[in-house]
Length: 408
Image (cartoon, rainbow, N blue to C red; front, side, top):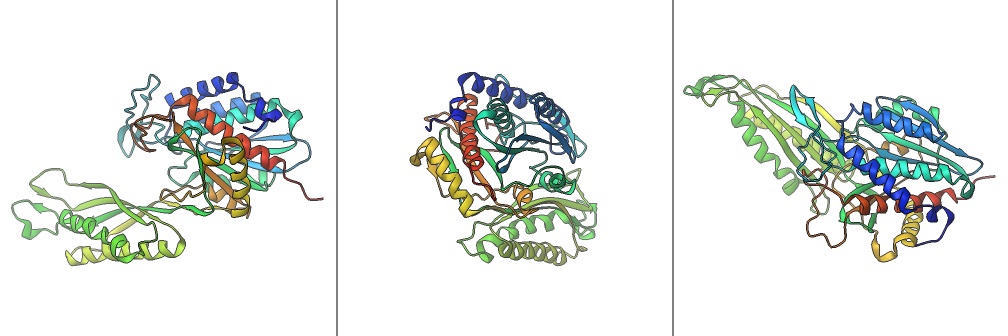
């Protein structure tokens, strides 16, 4: 590991404080767009560090750490949780609930955004305390509503880049189900585009004993769900990592009543704009055609979310990869990151035409037998190892970018 004044300042005491933060945020997750308490805690911490603090959009918080002449670098952490019932068995497991679509649902940091917050706050505190070791400006972006692809776009629309200095790059990282002490980075498109819809299939209700008087939306929905699985297998080049998933089906109130409508919610992941256009067109064609085949009116599509590209600038990503090599050793840095999941962090960089650099870091103690993935109710990172890996990775890349020569 490199010996620098900043790196040496990452002490066991700072790690312990960051783990305490992680545990606190893990206990109290909030759903996308409702991160009020989380934002208040972040704002208090950044204000206490003496940063220039802005509230941007709905529960977005930005802290600007100015430290003389030098590069401006933005670092983003997301803050929202998910409607998942935690089953980790951790002593600090979440017991939070919230209202969602008319029902009370459990809430959990099942994607690890609690670790992102804790790491970012720890790094902001470290750089604030060790100003004599670096110069420049860091814009700390705590972004809500990543899970719904709304947060980054909302912060941009609310004037983020009019309030803070323009960075040379936007940096970010995400915890994932690999061993701690390991990181993964890629070049170009590193994650899929994402599109989600709620589709209402309209029929005609009737008694279950008189199906001839109905247009059965459940049968139409069933055929639609099965046929949608042919989009990827028969219409997309196998070398392109596309996914079509139907994650929700809702219809009916009683076994002997054919309902008026059935609702399905579906999610599409595609690697680029061309495949996105092809897959989305195929999905709409199939949904409309199955309704027509069943004698039903045209279905109603309601968009749930639309994730932008997550494009790692190759030149800047290589700079970050070299910094990660120096910190963890080249054998612990995977350079082939290409995930089928989606992220909205790219919207922050694309909005002002600056490079994005995004990578993944390990969540679990090396050698652990079970490593549940993000979004699982069992996703329970080993706190100390995970936070340490995230902080070391973030610090290594930040330090490298803050050392970049400035124009003039």
